[in-house]
Length: 195
Image 1 (cartoon, rainbow, N blue to C red):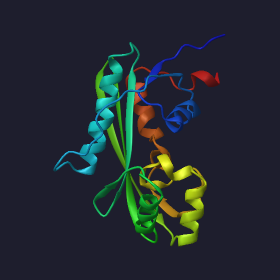
Image 2 (cartoon, rainbow, N blue to C red):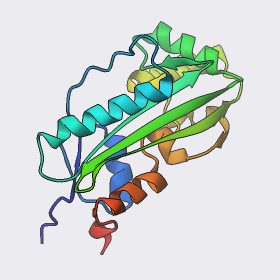
Image 3 (cartoon, rainbow, N blue to C red):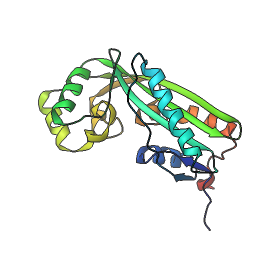
């Protein structure tokens, strides 16, 4: 028996797809391409919320299902750290994060029958001191290449994280507690694939 998708994910992120699957949401993926440039004067929370909203609205043009858009940024000392451009850029970011705390902001926007619903979740991540040799070895794994801030908390970089204050799933890419609330308000069933 085929289970019909109940949600459109406006992203190609395997992490977001896995997180939605973990709560039994049946998803179709329709990645969208929007301008992700940081605008002059835009705060990190305004930036991440705009991207999530833009993805949800762009996806709504491609699907009749409710559409979820999300975006995650790492913010260190007020500066947005994107995906590393190369090895040296990753080294600079991880060196800056080493032995300090930073914020991870994940915004979720869900377009559906009750309009556009949005949430933004902030989690504080405290990193231990990371040695230069560890940074080099971590880069060599390939894991940090497409990750905001140059690390994946759900992967090998978990050993760098001393503690977090907030939502672990939000740091991975989707705050499940808040996302589930938005999905229920839009009438998207949870646990479908599990029954």
